[in-house]
Image (cartoon, rainbow, N blue to C red; front, side, top):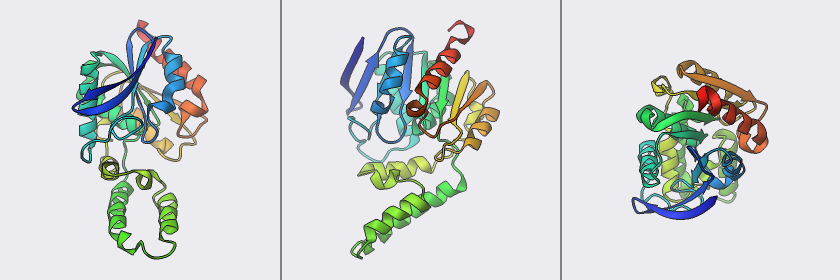
Length: 256
């Protein structure tokens, strides 16, 4: 059983994909393409669960938010989404930016989440993230010099090598400010508040969310275990079979 549909949540059109039957399992994608990047994993997991994925507001086939959003806007939206689909006591997987949201949700509403799976999750924001947010604000001022020949080329080099991210430059409209809001929030103080069983999965070659964050996270989240794979930031593309096995082993523990 597989269903793709648009639903309205708080007047925002949201594209969602639901596959399989059984215990609900919600996937939150990272910053970028949306649910399409998780279809292979969703279809495999749908043999065991009812797997729900969605394009978060501002991504994929869903509408943009009507203003720049914060992390809290996204988490309250996800709770509204879960309520609309009548899913409760669900498994929750978050990748990268989706992992940040999953961290906040698990600390805020642990009664709704059966188990938590964090895949190369963003969340610890070093001081340079605040510097980064300031640099991004500075860049928006520097735009007045955009008439200078080669400005666009230099700007792209700046994003790639200084900020080490093209997410901001690729973001459109309200998503530029949303990106700044997101990278400005450090979640490391939230980790100890997570009490539900947690599986942390990381790629040791991840150059977006550093491997040391995985060890810090495992130390702070008391009821957690850590699995490290020989991959980069996108384990779901690089090592899909290993990822599926780790998820199934983890969810099967204690007779779930």
